[in-house]
Length: 293
Image (cartoon, rainbow, N blue to C red; front, side, top):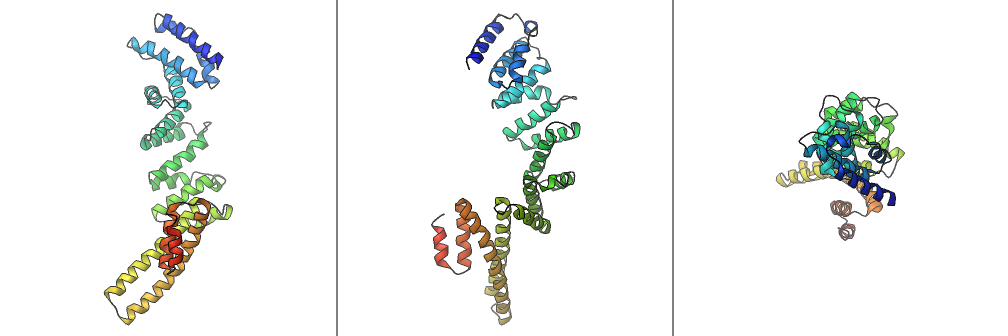
């Protein structure tokens, strides 16, 4: 801490005595050392002042200064400066892997999903052997799921290796992708694979809990409505058959929701359990779970 404060004081004094941008480029080894050692708060203050000296003269700073200033700002969550500096270099024809990575992370932090995806895609295209290639490829898949880009997600899924496809993070995203795309057979398959390796996986448990609940509830409501509109013996027989099927699915959903509730005690699970027990004509249990809402 003392060393950083002394360095900062010397930096400020040095910068205040500089006559122009040219005087700042003679010795950047100290700033670079702070940057390379991960002392980003100190490095950011130094590079910010260096950039300011150029811009006060109506000039752009060298790209290398914008890069280090932007990456340092990103590390200390000074996002307005990270955006300002990184965008100075990120859209040029030739961009380093570090800049593409940092810019994608900056857009993620400021919640600009479309631009994050753009830079993740550029990284994959330009640096297939980059140090962060796997990490950013996984993140790109997550962004396709978040944006419900089924085509992009399925295309990228086919690029993953068999070993990568066994990683839970990726399987969870793939489950979500198939769920909202309506491919229930594939979603069921990957959901079972996840639970086979991790019986307490929240994403897979929620998928099956919601799936059986929705299936049962839709059938229950539609057949009850049909019977109320047409109270014939034939319709009543159909209703009894439908209720039997719905009851079976409600119980399957109940089992998944009970496991989720026992693990988390979340009120939304209790609310769904209360509704299910009402459908199963068990008001005592329904009222019990209402107490957790």
